[in-house]
Length: 263
Image (cartoon, one colour):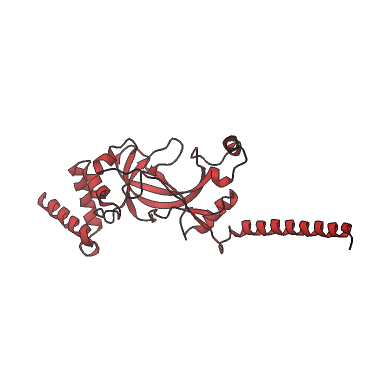
């Protein structure tokens, strides 16, 4: 076999390798958007924390404080910089910064939007129904909706914030929210700004010195606000004495004694 034949064989072999790599790459890229091969990616979120409930509600970032019921969940891809949906010119803007065409995941992020029917407003003037925005997606639920979006924008994986709170349709929460100019409001943090009012006496399981309850927040707006809340809550939760446990139960018993004494 002469040198010319060897070169022809080598060229064919190189072409075969290139085609194989491209094929495998395409398959891998396609498979990661398959319900049978879901890929999650962990994301980190830096939060601010406040020393007590008073500091939290008086924060310049606390635009809205509400109680509301979750009535729907949806997802959206947004520009990380502008908090707006993808638009023409996004890649060109970032190319100036990076010096090369960026990956879509550098520009865009998947967010979860919760539709909330507002029950009580303690601060601010939100619409009767509003949406709340949370970074990242939801693990093991609503997968078709999330995969359709990350496939459309080629984001590669469903981003998950491991310490996120699970918000459920039909349940009611107290939210402390910050309003952004172009996007739906978002909680100030996970532990202090979201409280499931099935148990308004519960404290989040993190550093105790920064820990307070929905009761603490509502009471800061006046004992009359807490009294109105508690009157409705005890009516809607007649089983609280058998359902609550530990410190929550003790705080609830104290609230009950105070409520009864005021009658």
